[in-house]
Image 1: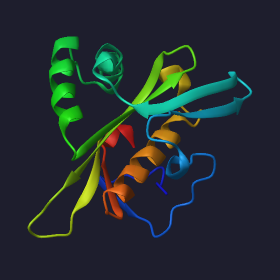
Image 2 (image 1 turned 135 degrees about the vertical axis):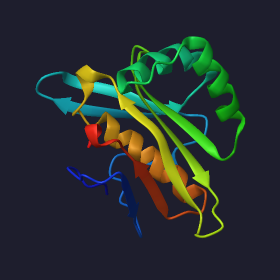
Image 3 (image 1 turned 30 degrees about the horizontal axis):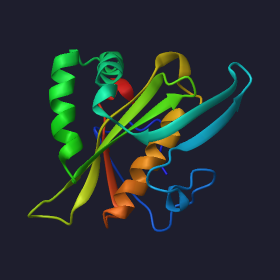
Length: 165
């Protein structure tokens, strides 16, 4: 579980047995996306699909990256995403609306350190501004948590600039 309102530059969270309510990646076939439905009084019934990113998602990922304050062109994002998607030490998940529009993404990767046990770290997380606070980011975090566990790690690290906490 992630704590809100922290004013630290680095947040480390661990968990023993995470609880998956309606996000059951453990039982989902690898080739089938997970569909999530959110009831929100402002947006009606928001449905999103959490799936692995594809290289074709680079334009949307670049656009959302700009909302984080990182100016990233389509070409730069494509180049980085190609490398990341080939690596077993990295995963990128996207949240898509039923119409296929990508409304969020998360990048998680595993690390090895000489001085400590391995852990996973969130490299980036963003949800489209109009959909923030609707639960999409939470579901992306749960996908990262699941990936972390599948990689034999029980520690997921998040770093954030003070402006974002």
